Amino acid sequence: MAPKPSTSIGHLGASEHKYSVILPTYNERKNLPIITWLLAKTFTEHQLEYEIVIVDDASPDGTQEVARQLQRVYGEDRIMLKPRAGKLGLGTAYVHGLSFCTGDFVIIMDADFSHHPKFIPDFIRLQQTYNLDIVTGTRYRSTPSPNAPGMPPGGVYGWDLKRKLVSRGANFLADVVLHPGVSDLTGSFRLYRKAVLAQIIALTQSKGYVFQMEMMVRARALGYTVGEVPITFVDRIFGESKLGADEIVGYAKGVWNLFTSI
Image 1: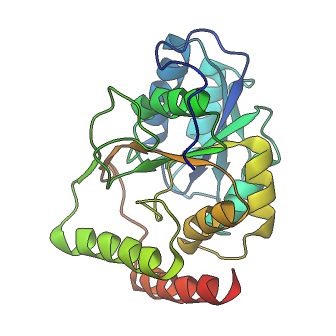
Image 2: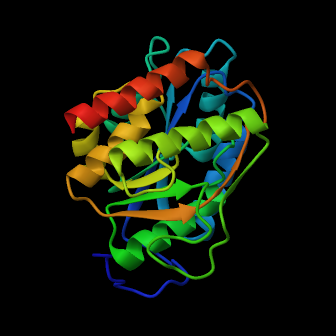
Image 3: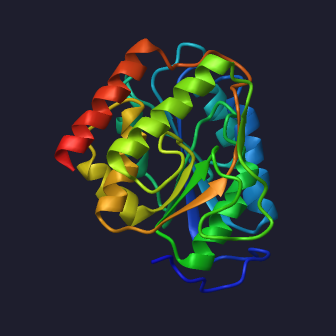
C-alpha cells in the first residue's frame, strides 16, 4: 500500500531536522569546491541545518588540502574532513562517514558534480510529505513516486550509448531477478533516516557498485518505505569515471548473490 501524504508539498522553511551529507572523495580537488558551494547555497536558501562529511581515501591530487581550505571558509562545524589511509571502497566510506554524522537524516551523493544539490529540496519535500524512510534519486522515471507535483522528469547527460546500455541493462537485470520496486537501483544519490541507514549498512556485505543495490534490496526486505525523485545525472566535470569491466562483472555476481541470500 502506498504511503499517504502527511503534509502538503511547498516551501520547506525552517526545519527541526539536521542533514548530514557524506561525500566520499578520491582525486576530487577540482570538483570539491563547486559541490561544496552548491550544497551550502542549497541548504542556506531553504533554511536547513546541515553538515558535510568529506571521506577522502588518500587522494594524491591535493583533495584534502582543498577540504581544509573549505573548512576555513565555511567553518569546521559545517565541513568535516575524515580521511582514510587509502582506497578502501565506497561502502566502507559510508560506514566511516556515518560514524561522524550528527544529523538525523543522511544524504549520500557523489562529489564529482554528477549529482546536483538542487534536487535535495525535492528529496526532503517528498520525505516530509509521506514520512518516508528513504528517498532515492532516479534517472529513469518521469514522475516522482509517491506522486508529487512540480518535479521535472529524470535523465542522463554526457554518457555514450554503451554506458547508457550498461546502466539500463544493470537495472533491468536487478529488477527482473530481485523485484526491488525502484526504477534506479544503481543510483547513489539518496536521503536516509540516519537510524535506517545505520541498520541497513550494518547488514550489507557487498563492495563497490553492488553496495548501493544491496542497500536498497535490504531496505525493501526490512519493510522500510522508499520514495523516488526524478533527477538529471550529468557525467563528471573533471576527472575520469571509476567504472570498469571488473565492476560490471562484480555487479552481475552481486545480483545473483542477493537473489540466493535475501
